[in-house]
Length: 105
Image 1 (cartoon, rainbow, N blue to C red):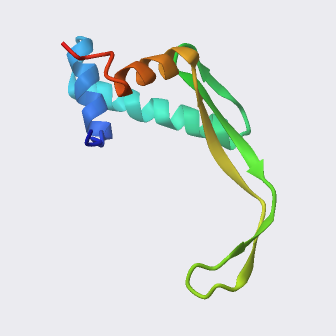
Image 2 (cartoon, rainbow, N blue to C red):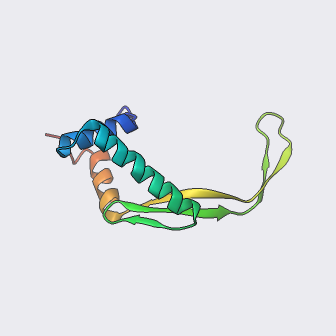
């Protein structure tokens, strides 16, 4: 199965089909949503969307790695990463799709 990459534009168009709003308005809502989630994660907050998943930022400890180019050991400082944990409902939907149970009509 070939993977298809969907962009912000796809999301905006899909939402326009779902609701009776202009493309410009939906694009502003999508941009605002991304801004709100980003700001919350920057503040160290967790964003939970029921039946979809949870976004949170975590601190990765400092570690030691190897440079791919030179093979020399490099130290990697601690840093924040964004983590997404899908809900059971989302996992179930994707699992069904990937195994061919959904959309086989």
